[in-house]
Length: 175
Image 1: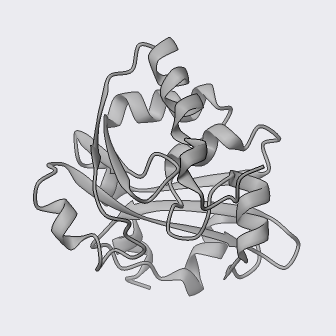
Image 2: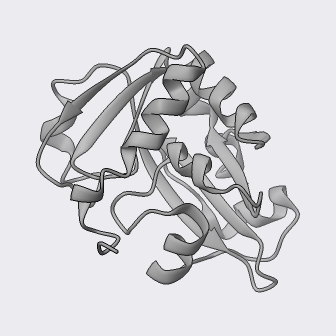
């Protein structure tokens, strides 16, 4: 079996197949691997829409949380747990990320909900991101960016069995 970060295994193929079956149209750009929002700055200039930062976290009881936020949003992570009804959140390690979402660090994405077939992950979306008509995510690999309409992304999340918890991080940070 290829290593998780060996993209020759084409982790995006099942994702694109599902999107096609659902009649969801996307566009995908290939680019150099990017691991942070800062590194993706050059990629963003040529791709319109809301760009994301995605965080995979857990609390002490093992509740897994995936947050997809606008790349420029400030996330008061020391407060979000109260809103979600869980304990304080911390970042997970690469093995848990792989086990739960089938992606590697740098490739975390809202589109990885396709791999959470056990329904272990609570999904949180930033209202600032959802203000855009077009959303941009890695398609399970960090050398591509896939653009999808907000409406279609929300439908995709629902098809994968996930409720989208919408959070206005600007209001949360005002406390």
